[in-house]
Amino acid sequence: MSDNAKKMDRFTTELLHGSRLKDQYGAHVTPIYNTSTFVFDSTEQGAARFALEEPGYIYTRVGNPTTNELEQTLAKLEGGEAAIVASSGMGAITATIWTYISAGEEIIADKTLYGCTFEFLTHHISRFGVKVHFIDMTDEEALRNALNEKTRIVYLETPANPTLKITDIAKTAEIAHSFNPEIKVICDNTFCTPYIQRPLELGADIVVHSATKYLNGHGDLLAGAIISDAETIGNILLVGIKVMTGAVLAPNESYLLMRGLKTLAVRMDRHCSNAMKVAEFLNSHEKIETVYFPGLADHPGHDIAEKQMSSFGAMISFIVKGGRKNAAVVADSVKIAALAVSLGSPETLIEHPASMTHSTYNDEELLEAGIPGGLVRLSVGLEDPEDIISDLAQALDKVEL
Ligand code: LCS
Image 1 (cartoon, protein in one colour):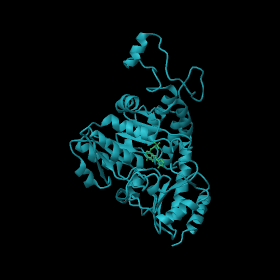
Image 2 (image 1 turned 120 degrees about the vertical axis):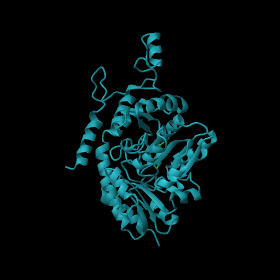
Image 3 (image 1 turned 135 degrees about the vertical axis):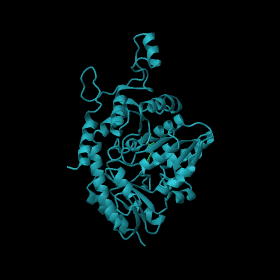
Image 4 (image 1 turned 180 degrees about the vertical axis):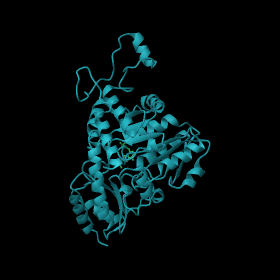
């Protein structure tokens, strides 16, 4: 067995046993503590908890036992000291950014990001006196040129949504921190999960997730997660989550997310092996211009992906010859894949980024970010890979060149 396979097996054990909460009845599965508030024995005790002098629960917006178990598990999996879950990926991202940015400061972000993250950084945070520089994070010179004394945050996704562009996390963190160690390098690890990539170990300061996707893995809830060192997580909890957004994950959702998370490793293995087969099929298809999948040897980020990811994920994008019209023919003709946004569900999902997830980009921004009208995005599911391939084959048969 390879070292990596062994490491991944230990990851699975940790996932299942690492943080199990022991309740007073010895429940094997952590119960759902559906309570908004917690009773104090005395005013003295309540005051001590508010002053953070005594451990214990106060109110579910700042902590809950069901949610806590999930947070401790996520912290261990990502190799962080602590974690907070949020009511959505956008809740996690905005709570983190609000905690660390002030008027007059600057953010450097990659220009290829999930559409709503891009919208937040382009149209909304600018209203509060924050400047955002959008660069291609794989261009080291561009990063060095954008860094200045006002830079507070460097923000990236790798692989990026939807082009699967790969950024070298260690290199990016090294450049940012050697300019100023106080800069927070934030990495969105949604497409990988810690089973495949652990940005904190590579030098990032904060990992954010849409836990709606692979971490939950069942397409039945919205959630987010933030993982970092204990001090950073304490700040984000008390500022970004508790006060500035209130984007708390409810105990019911925390329970469901914990339940989904338990099978992360086995699901990811199947997602990834299915995706490799689908990518190879698409790559040899005459009606496809380009396939974006980091597992293909000709992907520009393949070497870095091999270095920083333990496998290549299960998201694939491809450009259909003939542009937007033919991309729509493929997306409209699939029968097994569902025409829907989101990703990381058990079922294969297909979507058209330029008109859906990335419709927050204008035409010029789409071009800059490498998202042409002919691009189709696929979240490869857990079905029989031959069925996914035949479904795509019959949809591509409908394309007329
Ligand atoms: N980060 C990434 C990389 C994402 O793909 C998404 C959502 C988010 C953050 C936001 O997470 P949410 O608030 O939805 O939990 N991505 C979506 C997508 O590609 N299709 O639909 C949602």
